[in-house]
Length: 111
Image 1: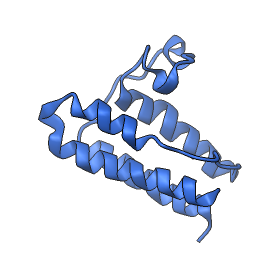
Image 2: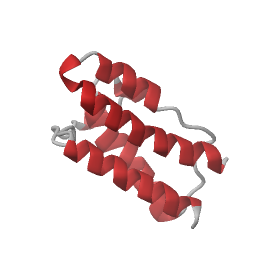
Image 3: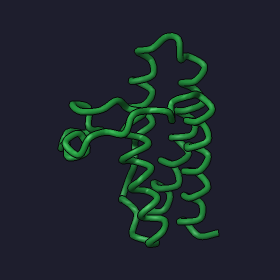
Image 4: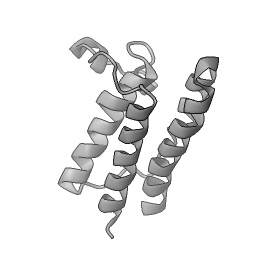
């Protein structure tokens, strides 16, 4: 299985996890929000928005084009910090962070 196929499977699991934890149903960010230059667009959108409309969207493009993947990826720690702030999502946090760790791992092992 190619690295792009592995990444596609990991991204689909992340998407399914976000849907199962009700973090997928977020408002689409504006063009201005998407133009943010801050890491994770922290100044313009929530982490679930960034995951869906930036992170997953960019990974889907890389997968479709079989593009060169980033040299490294470490999104899981940021997601963990974000989700720790909402105690009502303690169970969801573990599921989402684990799914993101899988994406991180596929990318990191590819380089």
